[in-house]
Length: 65
Image 1: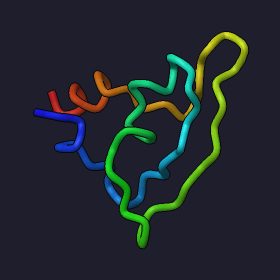
Image 2 (image 1 turned 180 degrees about the horizontal axis):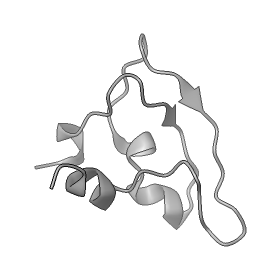
Image 3 (image 1 turned 45 degrees about the vertical axis):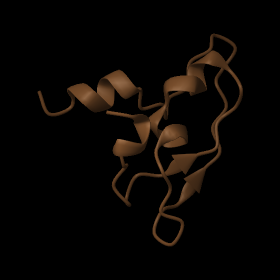
């Protein structure tokens, strides 16, 4: 299964993210977009590398377990 197999529901905002390590496994950045239905947010990790809007791939995979 690849990252393109995951889609955020249209009511989840997407984010373009940054080049930081924090953003590299965030579903808001990695999932394919639905431009006509999804809103975008602009988040930047804080000085500790944390982002309050991040949805990690691990969290996404574990959400239904």
